[in-house]
Length: 240
Image (cartoon, rainbow, N blue to C red):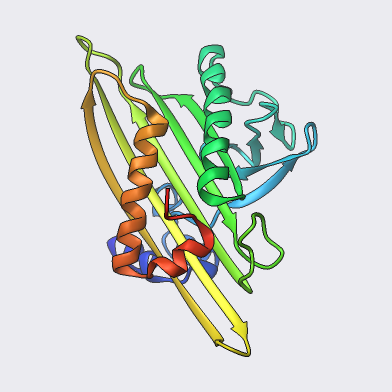
């Protein structure tokens, strides 16, 4: 399992689906661990009820259906599906609205989705997702790469409050890939990913604000490990 995770951390994002399928065939007894721990490039689906796209991931999937954060319906429809409580659903709606504003200001386009659900420890979990397509036909105002993608996954676990203090665990993953092919620069391809986890013990917490700060730290890490700021700026603004 350790070798499999090491392989997935080093493989090109475009090849992650093929590599994961091969590992699932080789290690069927570790299938649940692989599916839960391996982050793959995010996929999109259109909510036909409202005409808006949403992001697919393990956190809004039940069987082979995915729940839309906009209509709170599964696509395709699923009987006896899991849904968040009414209070958590209200929080999910507000978080999607706020995160969409953040996404537009910092990424100048793209798709974002937020999902929330109860855990087994009387707390809840929130997943904040952003997918930015920087290709010539992609979303946003900076899409002039032949191919370019920024996939961000931020999962925050909120524990039950004890004596006015709550425990938070934020796990973040960013996958970034760029490809150019023109006469001036020729063919150039670059990709990488980074994953970090941080624990908080706080009286109160602004989830979106904490997520924003962690994204900023992640971008700085990307500069030092994989890319210069000029590359990252193609997919996300760095001056805010």
